[in-house]
Length: 232
Length: 217
Image (cartoon, rainbow over all chains, first blue to last red; front, side):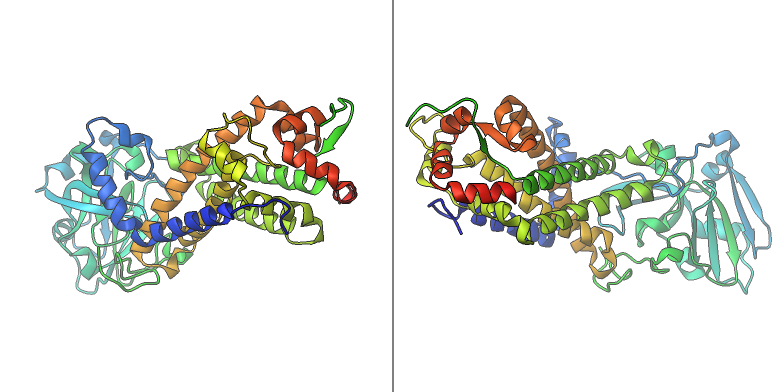
């Protein structure tokens, strides 16, 4: 085959690199955690030049990051409730706050470690509106006009599910889904509706935007979307 | 060795190899550009449809592997397969060239210098790695969270590295224009071949019948 004498170094390098890739897939989760923590504490800022240092990826299903000034913002809690609510941004922020210091895990693999969330517990809002006995689930809507999500009543009442208005101690920006978004800590990111403007109490689960496109309705991290392993 | 005739040119890459290279270049450009949009996070706002950018990235990326298979597999891929075999093998001259970082002028190189060999091997391996990690990311339902995170991490690193190597490849191609011409017109001057790739030049002269056959391929 070859006209040139010599050692098959090309093949060795090739197989070595493919091996590095395979080992990287197996260990990348650990390495990327370690690398992200290093990048967070890096005083030189040099780590920002290299990939994998964490950081957000900003998704939108409409091709646009809708902007709504806090003065114009309204959150509706309606459906099977005793008193439908329409909260302004100021009213929401004035409610007793809850804080979570938790990771944000996307179903496609990327994750941001130790995000500081502040908001109002979703169950507090439901209690204020008064959920009727035959209610079973929530349908959540976004003011982007397209995105929807669902939660069972049991999931919605968890302590680690909140209507968030602060991310890392700052008001949530438009690309992060601000001024108000959902944060469902134990589930993949697609549950955490951005630009949240409606919480409708309904009598059965209505699959949301991605769920109509094949994603699991119960989006537990590590226990859904094709797998059942340890929760991160 | 007698003085090379400047009017005579040496066939370096066949038409099949050149078409394969430029198809590859176009697909790489599309894949890398769309990949960068995700990497820097502006693809979503710059282009209205994120799903479209993603589809373009995935299918142009897979297209790289398909186009390569089509170029190398059939009968017409003979010259390309022969070059791959050259890229694989390192002569003792290659090792010396590499150790002296190209400065040892007693070295007699074959068709490719070791830098070109490493570049080709890296880009090939990276295409495979990016292909399988990208597939895990795209068809993520079949994989656990840690595997997805690992695939994403590896994909980012190899994507970043391939930007650097492709950029280097383009810069070096423009710095050695005769070599670049080998990939556009398919031929190089005898002077270039004799000076920069003496072992290959000698080889071509000793096997003229095979050359003619290759040039027709």
